[in-house]
Image 1 (cartoon, rainbow, N blue to C red):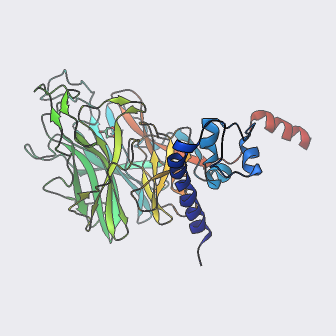
Image 2 (cartoon, rainbow, N blue to C red):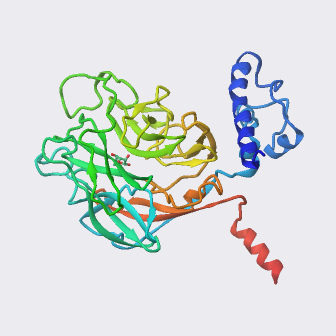
Length: 416
Ligand code: AAL
């Protein structure tokens, strides 16, 4: 028997398709005074508060295309709060701890991995031999454990930078953990010295049969930027001048996250393009996916890339046979939760007011319980200053009703 959820999702896909049809059809037949192509019940018109169904504004037409689930259930909407953690995750002057991985549980303890470095950020004008150009420069990957998710104990180094000359000799950072078949995999960003504004960023992988290591590193990157962009001139500190921009990921492949999916391994990542521009949605940041038969690769970029025209750090989880994705920070679709039945073709399911940055998801959650159940609590990072970031906690709740303080006042009075 088909589950209620599957029926609902089918409905969403069906209704999700309507806007496409409407756009194609509507382009020739619709005008602002006609809604011939929109089949609308009185209930929907009433719910949306539309004054005159024969005089639909462009906004009303778009609203009429929302699915029942988007309109009435609000299943993909949440609000969030962030809070300080204790132990070694309390803020420490002089130390950068940022971009926490997902949380996994092993032998009754939560584990997370993160970028760690010390010292202030000087920028590109400093001494290239010793200074840090970004807070995530000259990082190594460290890890910490916790009994309760609140008090964390730093356990030490997991994956160090490579030796001089290696593809990861300058920094290894922004890592994600994947547990599969008794093995642990950390994927992460890498930079090779010298760190200039045109340097390409790649993705590395390390594996172990224990979350406590030791970790074996891949000799070569598992993913690299597209090589079809062309810089203009040879100023290594000018990342904006290009003769050709190339693919969405021609400059950097970032924020990797590997998800076992449909018997394969989907490596989701953020792409940065050479000659990055500001478009109508802000920075040109998009997401892509590369797929492999084995956790260690080879990872082949999907020909459908980019799979999102918006977003920043990757935050993806399996849900109802597909993949859900929280899109934040950049692009016209930022602050939306999206879902793809095939892990590639994402549709907007809901919009949120905002979301924590650089989320470390709680992979121990029952992510099938509700679309955003995996976001009920987890890790995030915060800039205390530009030099130093620290790891904090967040929690979310689904909001289906708006309660103002005046509502609360009325309720209390009634009680008296
Ligand atoms: C983050 C991530 C990547 C970038 C930097 C550190 O938000 O997108 O990790 O390189 O900022």
